Amino acid sequence: IAGITQAPTSQILAAGRRMTLRCTQDMRHNAMYWYRQDLGLGLRLIHYSNTAGTTGKGEVPDGYSVSRANTDDFPLTLASAVPSQTSVYFCASSDSGGNTGELFFGEGSRLTVL
Amino acid sequence: GQNIDQPTEMTATEGAIVQINCTYQTSGFNGLFWYQQHAGEAPTFLSYNVLDGLEEKGRFSSFLSRSKGYSYLLLKELQMKDSASYLCAVVDSNYQLIWGAGTKLIIKP
Image (tube, rainbow over all chains, first blue to last red; front, side):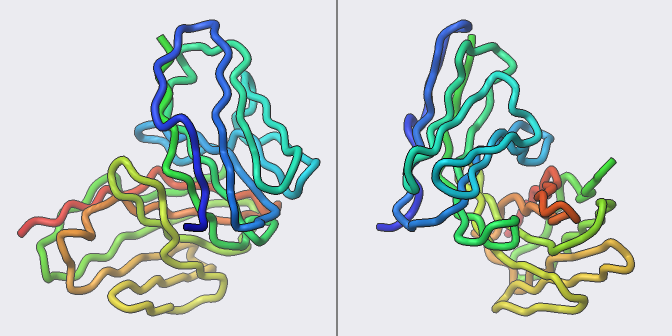
């Protein structure tokens, strides 16, 4: 089934630890995004990539890094996790750049930092 | 600053009609999206409006007035499965996507 796969689905992490959230899509979409979703707030963009080999910072990039070595994969790394990074993380992709196309979301990764 | 306003929560009855409003103040406008998100799941696309007027898609319709900075999502013949959060998002002049906090819709029998 075509779509976006995220892993892990859920993770509890000690503060200070490094963590990578994986995201893979098989739709050959050029644009990919990482969002975090917190109660009472809209989705907030962490990082994005318009095409393989390029990345950009979103609204809340601090403490996170991404890479886009190929079209399909877009991992998100927390170098040293802090409790404020407790959130649900969604990876998304789109075949249209400039945010004018439908976003396809993964099922989310629920991260708790203690 | 840029802002998207939606009601936090609404309640409606199965079989009825509900209108979820979204008002926005953004630097420019290049389109407005509505997404549905069931609890614990990913958002899924419902509609995209870039011109004024009503777009109908089955039981769901979305309306846009760019001059008023206003959109609504109309859900007809409500079903229990329509219980979800509905997210409004606007594409601004820099083609950044600005998200509202979402409206939680509760459907009662």
